[in-house]
Image 1 (cartoon, rainbow over the protein chains, first blue to last red):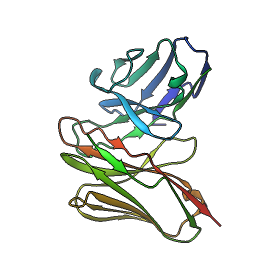
Image 2 (cartoon, chains in turn green, red):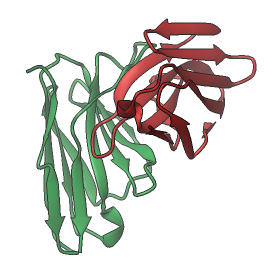
Image 3 (cartoon, rainbow over the protein chains, first blue to last red):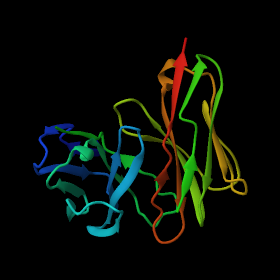
Image 4 (cartoon, each protein chain N blue to C red):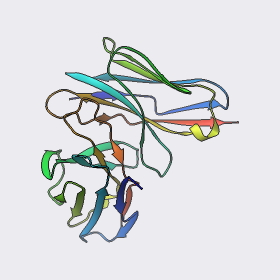
Length: 115
Length: 111
């Protein structure tokens, strides 16, 4: 199936741990993103990569580090997890950030719970 | 920056029509999206407006007024499966057309 996939779907961990979320898209898109959706359903951009290069980094703590080995993959590594990091993290892709119609295709989300 | 406002929650009856409003303030406005998000699932694209007017797609229509900074999503012949959150998102010119999302409107359709 052509889609954006991410693993794991659920992640429960202790404060202070380090964890990673993986994302892959087989849509041939140039641009990939990480969004965070908090308990109030507010969907906020964290990072955007275009052809493996970081093009936007919103005010995100440097405990969050994205890595893009190729344009089909964008992983998110989180160090020293905090309670406030609990949220749903969505990976997304779009054909090109330079396109005015920059439609986002979202992965299924990773629900992160920090205890 | 961008500011997007939409009602938090709406309820409607199966078979009825509902209009979900979105107002925005942004410099360099480019276009406006509507996404649907069912509970526990990913947002999915519904519509995109860049010019003033109404875009119709089946039971769903989206309207945009650039001068008023206003859009609405119109859902006709409501079905129970339309119960979901509806997210308004705006893109602006300036190098990258990355959408800024509103907080979403939770629509509850009851029999």
